[in-house]
Image (cartoon, rainbow, N blue to C red):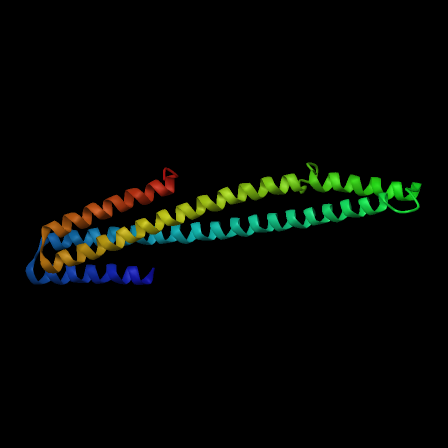
Length: 193
């Protein structure tokens, strides 16, 4: 972000020098335009970093949910295998073994679906899917803010060059690109994109 601010500062200084040496009123307006674009650029970069943070948090939570799901799935598989072994013991199923089998089956049911505690395998998959959607949305927003920031940097560059070259077409191009970038950033902020 400091590099972007530095570019904006240089553009404002060029406009100031051009105005002092030639009294060019267009240079003053370009300096205001550069300052506006620099402020919008700073906000776009803040939005980009915030979206990146949200993406990372949701991605980590999603990964944790899947890991917890896999641990429970492994435990279910182990209990099922133990029950199969207990059912096939050479001495038959004694009342003590039957009690262990029933307890294991109750645990399996609870591991698969536990709406009371909210951490059964079914609930973990739903939570992971929710965090995946949130992470994808945050990543999409991050890319949107990055695009707006890039366009604003180009607009600042064109505005700065227009002061040196005194080309009105560059001023208008900078204003158009910067305006579209600001609108795009606002659309990303509002959730329209």
